[in-house]
Length: 176
Image (cartoon, rainbow, N blue to C red; front, side, top):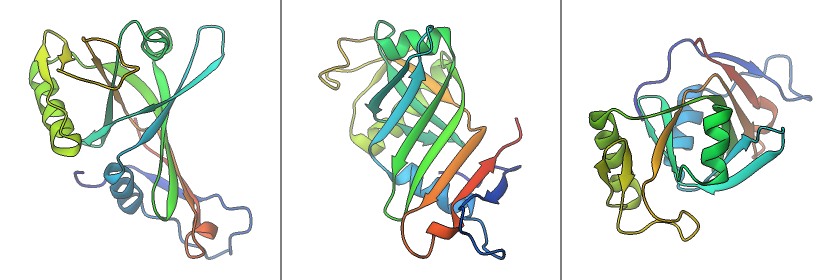
């Protein structure tokens, strides 16, 4: 993870929080989010139906990157409604990050993201055109290509799950 994202406005949202409860820091929530290995992504279909799937993701330059087959429901949803929420369960908090999604097609950026995938998961991707190719993927992913999408955080939530953080559960709003 890089330095904490500038412009975050944090507010305690726990219903029973003490008046002087301090928000959870974004640097801590972002660090814990980046360290997790398993995530869930929520997208929306054209008719408004939610679609949630487990994904692998990496955190590079305060953005979240994941992949999908263009033919998958997730890929179709992101193409027609380019926004999503990605969540993770860290040891002391559950974290949800929401924001707009964009396809990544710059080869240099794709190589950097591919290196992050290799460092985190050992996934040996190569960049071919505007997508990843790899000798293997999740069984449900199908065959390559795997398009990379970038989620830019606009709103995030850190829900404390231990006694010290529960009353400090926090909503973060980021400047665009």
